[in-house]
Length: 392
Image 1: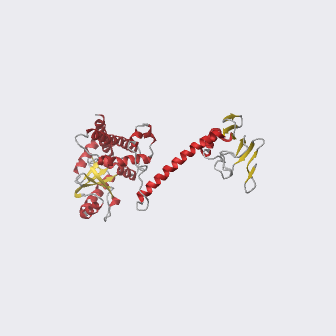
Image 2 (image 1 turned 45 degrees about the horizontal axis):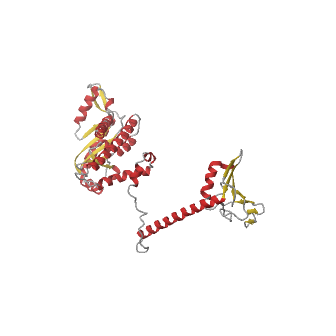
Image 3 (image 1 turned 45 degrees about the vertical axis):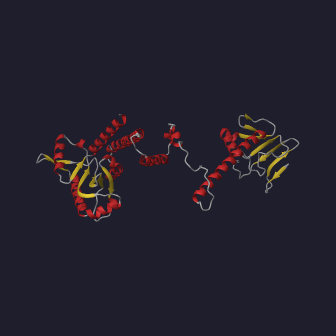
């Protein structure tokens, strides 16, 4: 018994008298990357577990052959037998695997049942989806398959290994839902446990965030970074570093005539302050030998003058600016805005320099100089307070 393709190549041939034969897979079969032929043993008629068209094993074939190939690779040789039990015979160069067809037929029945069940579930989900999306066209169904099953997340997160396996998308989704959960919580005198869980969660999140921010801050302080790099870093973390503020306005956010500073920040009461960002390596003061005292370094003096100009410009255009900021969602009050310049390191100042730096800083009318390491110290102090709160 021989069956051929249109090109006259053999799909299978069976010697009925000897009950032996060979089955050759099509070149376009997905199973040919694992085997290209199957030895037939004990058959007088064509096996029920193979496609007569040359596409290989039915039903279980697609998951079965990859498993065998992963185990034995190119050494794999497969025999389908009507009478012999399933077996593995490992030689030096070849591994011969015999598959018992009656057993394979039984496995195929189970797999087919699973596929029918899964297909039924898929159809039910599709019907549920269509009825909800197009209720006027499709009959209403309520399988519940598209709905969230309560306790699924809780059961999942009880496994500690899940946290380490979370993807970036998982983490982003969990962080995004946290404020919604807090907003949806009904607080009462009997909800102390819920309040405590939320409070501890917020404090722990802040503590972890601060630890990472401090570590990054210290790492950057040891490098000679451009002002733009510090502007980017502080833009991301400035509301935490300067925790009296509630809103950051970048100069790209407002379009008024003239230059605008690196940042304008609005505090919890709606008052606006101006920030200019320099570098930790920016010199703060220079020594005047003739007068035996220190004066502002040239670069910092320019920054002070520029900040004064920013303040003046903001005050002159305060009504227009307040109107634009209102569109951004901020009810800012521009009343005597204060200017701040983040520059240099206090650690670079000697005792004499620090005294004159303090005098010079106090003499400024509308501008204050904040050192990078002072900013870092404030952040460390905030972290220590949070650590004490979390551990108490």
